[in-house]
Length: 77
Image 1 (cartoon, rainbow, N blue to C red):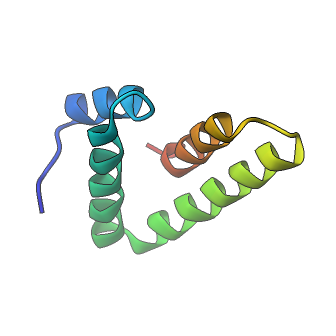
Image 2: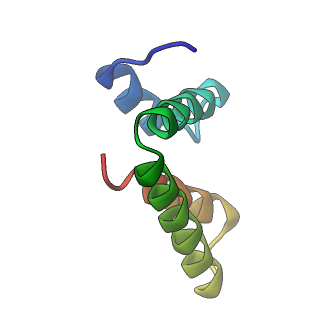
């Protein structure tokens, strides 16, 4: 598994919706989180799902819902 530095992660989060490789970097980070702290990973995924559902209820556009999901997944970092 490729390790990602903090600066690479920040850049990838910012560009996730502009560049396809950003999504893979975020997924790599979440996989590392799952190995290091399964509880934090499960919590992050739960918050991601909740944030996305809230966006759906409010009628947000698909792109905005995906941004909410990303923010939910990364909110403890």
